[in-house]
Image (cartoon, rainbow, N blue to C red):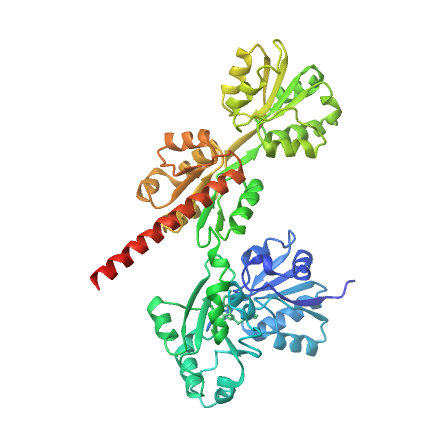
Length: 526
Ligand code: SAH
């Protein structure tokens, strides 16, 4: 029998990618995961199927499970021989009660290990462009709890000493006591003009930063409704933000972007959005399914060596075709007679992964262009196989037939509506939180419109922008009553993202010029 063990794992400050390699490895292996409120929910998706996942709460002032109960649970699960991951925000030993939990495990005789994490105390300021130390501004650093009501006599913090005892002071859990904290520091001898900053939801797409001085930061926070979870930073290092601010300068920072592609394909787009500082919300409106019947695909596989060309118009087409080929215990050798054409670079890459070289991809990545490009390559009477979506448009087979080709169109897959999350989709759209919706095929538009419903779409008209991967998708969107704001110049995911970034930049420029003209008029009135 295996011996149980508890890993106290730091989940990092918020951005799920800031977990350690060791931390992620243990999440994937755990039998039981007990996690806190500030843990990035996306990390839990790495748990293995069947792992037990328990929420331990820890909202300020109301714990879902009492601390003693958590310790008892950890020992109990490990006692059953399980691999337990206790997942905590930031670093487990920085104000995370990790010390207490480890003590309890020690007392219960349970084996444990600590996996340190990136603490919000350092990471939130770093993402706001504030280094905790700097040779010219700060040689000492103190990390302090802001949780102890500082005006109480029984505070364990020596406010007089701490006020001037370190160059950089970083407070966690301090928002409720911000007024008292700043007052105590000023009373303790720190200049009221010392720069101070607040960073809320640091490292996450919704990060917000407020900069002021010890004297006015509280008033500013009240005015802008700045609340937890935030880190308070006091010291000259705050001034470096002006030069070192980087995360908030990313082109898509603060933008909430809806991704409507099928779940398996959403990741590539989401990753690009997030690398540019945006927040991606995945709401697949379509799902890739098997064709209703395989008869035509199976027949074409049987006589593959009769085809002169096989034309693939999507990655899904490639994957479903080869899956079926394997199902018949056949492989790429069956294709020895055929020349291959792909609609664009991703489809070509998918074929290259099977070791196949593509003869032709069109200059413009859409079906119409394939026929244009194959003119001159394709001889009259040649047989062309088109394995693609059951519902694909007829333009390509029609154009190829007109050129004298003998076209065999087969349904390799089907796109069907992704049922189940339309209530959640309606909710995010209804709240007006979405800045932009992306469409990567006509079917994503069709089922998005179906899922959202026309009453909601008319009510939210103009509240979010619409970006389409190409003219065909844009045409489908317009036909369904959507106003299309952006169409990618190059019809790929990269092209789509590039177009979104460009449009954000021009929006930013026009906001700035508005700002400049407002300033001008102020000067005028003065
Ligand atoms: N162990 C954690 C801290 C837990 S205490 C760590 O090392 O980060 C909880 C406090 O951490 C919050 O009240 C807030 O002050 C801070 N905090 C946690 N995540 C944060 C984030 N993403 N941005 C700003 N502050 C954060």
